[in-house]
Length: 345
Ligand code: TTP
Ligand code: MG
Image (cartoon, rainbow, N blue to C red; front, side):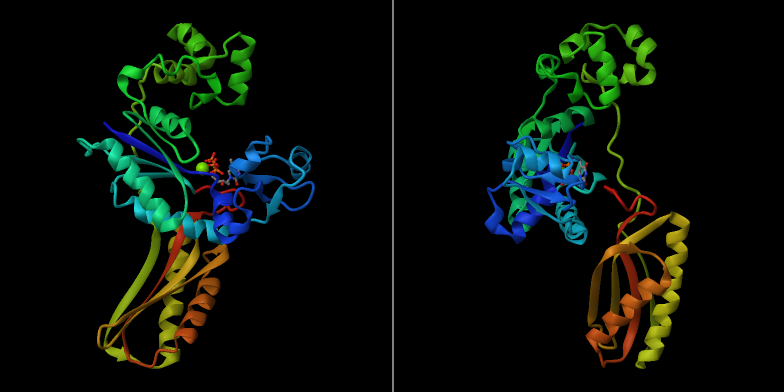
């Protein structure tokens, strides 16, 4: 088994830097503008001052008075994320997206040249999107994630079986995936601070005190993590299209078809509990030319009135005169409904 964990560096801040090259190398954060707002992330120059994700603005400013704080542009981040995930497909079809900027790839098919291939992936993402991605390679998920974090930013690290457990011993227990701040506090109170300390505890003790989680940690620090890469079964887009024998020419007929399709999409979205930030239309003319147009919105949508309004705009902008043999529309950049606020999916 070979698993790659990839995670973009200072993601939101890096996307902002692409739009504002003048801020590159200056401390930059993204998030709430008001003093009581919260930062979503900070670039690496800002992190040198101790600024980090989820930090209140007033605190960040007191640590770093020159901090540039930009508002969130969620639509841009979703678009960039999609670009990155499309490129990742070239390296493995078996991808599990875990957040907006993070994924596991099953690369068990890489028989040799693992380093070159990992570096090629980094290069590809950088060249095509302008973003740095940190990459970790190992034989299970826990170690792959640890590896991608090891040399951040712009890092690559490979953890092999023979590196376990020595490589992990000096790490603080917070690096063990699954040990949250509450467990960390409890372990600290027991005098357990490093992975080496944790390693000394026997399985029964950990299980008695921390139940299933304790057993997981016991196994993980010994390099045992059987979790497979679970290819996201959720489709990346929800779409519908219809082909006609008699080409459609009238605007109102096209709109009537789209309206019905948007209603279908709403029904499907409701069933699946999802919504999408991008609405697309697809048209094929009598002579088989395909036209697609998309619009990404500030807020994700699923109600037919919202998707239909976008479709109508797209149709009117395109102002296609040719008769159509296919009309379709789709919702992309899908995410769960209800966790819009801080969704990472
Ligand atoms: P992360 O990958 O955790 O952080 P990052 O990409 O900014 O930095 P790095 O990976 O180099 O350590 O999260 C990805 C994005 O998710 C981040 O850019 C902003 C967003 N996010 C929030 O909105 N709130 C949060 O509390 C966190 C941790 C991230
Ligand atoms: Mg990241």
